[in-house]
Image (tube, rainbow, N blue to C red; front, side):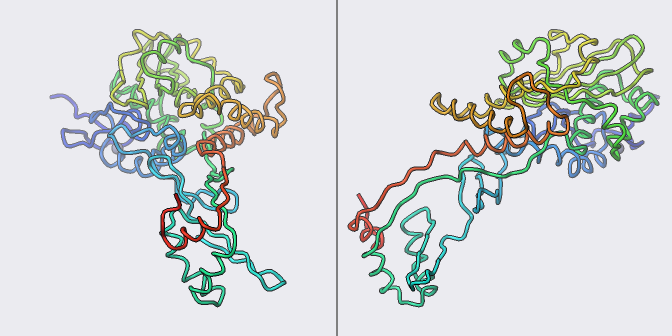
Length: 402
Ligand SMILES: [Zn+2]
């Protein structure tokens, strides 16, 4: 009788009831699953911890690019994003909504008061009138009379700068990335091989985290993968890629490209793993039905390339990728503005030209800030329209202001 199949992270037996594990996380649009590598317990635990950490880090990009999950769930909402002095929620469809209190009253020393009202519709304005009147200690009729005599400005705008801290490369998220590499490898070489001592440190990293492993065996690597143009042609400009390969000594490298923007190299085994094996899984997050786990044969990424992760960070490439993301939903007139944001953030960190060195300690911060500001730029430019007294009257009375 065959030995029962065991989970690569614990010794639970696997069977037909085992929960399917997404090899590339569902949040990244992964469709390919397996019941033969990870037990349901580990699957659930990882799902609510390290996979969730990775999913949170890509929320803003998913909202910006409107990326569904592998199982077809809509992009995540971004709740209570601080935008200047206001808070904004980005709905599933990417549209921002103010969650700031709808009105503020500023009383001036001369006894007059300035009322700033932020509402989306005239109906909403009229709904708040009693509250504003109460705040000003006057009746609603008096308030309307005063407002009719005053002037108003309708400002249609979206907040200018959103501070939404996202960071790539936090240890929890990298543990999820390492898990994806190990699971893909196990589908190729079997669970016993991945349960061997050669992968002990990598398994421990996934299970409990390890500062040392993260520092010594994980490298941010933003070189374009060999064959990137072919991958883009078939799997889109923001493809996700997992590629695992070993040499003749059983040194095993895992490579994970996220949205064709940022990549990590993980040394899964220093030596003694299965020799001369390779496996790749690629997926198009813009169309999760488009994926393949058989690309290692057609997209040949040499072991030497995988093993020689660039210790630096190729700013220009990351910059181009981020600009591509932000431009995805935008017309050409916005491109200069997007480039300005990227260059502005780079300048803030002392990077004036592509040849300037980047302090590795700033890599994350730069990437985060650019991404957050580009996400903010998914919002329209402000425009203001001054209301005539007549339009103001009509607005307050609930008539069309046409
Ligand atoms: Zn398990």
